[in-house]
Length: 165
Image 1: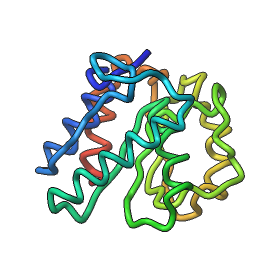
Image 2: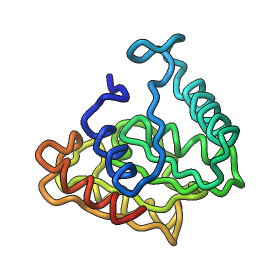
Image 3: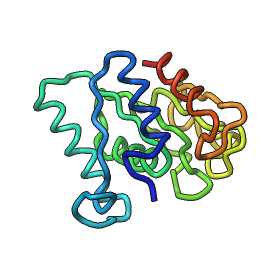
C-alpha cells in the first residue's frame, strides 16, 4: 500500500538530501503510476537492481540503499542475492512480524536498522535477536514513541538518518 510519496520514504530521502546526497526515489512495479504489477518481492528486487545500474551509469560509486517497511524487506533480499557488493543498507521499520526476513541469514552491507518503540510490525526484541545474524557490525536504533508509520516521529527519524550519512 505504500509508494514513494509515503511520509516515511519522503523523510528518508529528505535526510539524505540535507547531507547533499543525490537521491532517487521510485515506486516498485505496479505502485502509483508505475507499470507492471506486484511480483512477490522478486520483481521488486529487479527494480532495485535497475535503480543501482542506473545510478552507476550516471557515475555514482557510493550508493546507500534505504528502504522502509516492505522496501526494507526487498532490500534485504536484494542484498543477499547480489552479494558481494559495496553498498550500505539502512532498513527502516523492517516488518519482521509480518513477512519472513530470515532472521538467521546475513544481510550484506547492512549498516543500520531503525524501528519505533511501539512498532508491532517491526518489534524491537525480534530485530535485536536478528542483528547478530544479519550483521554483527550494524547498529540498531529505537525511535521512542514511534509506531510503524512513525506518526509524530518523522522529524526524529530524519535527524537520525541525517546523522548516519
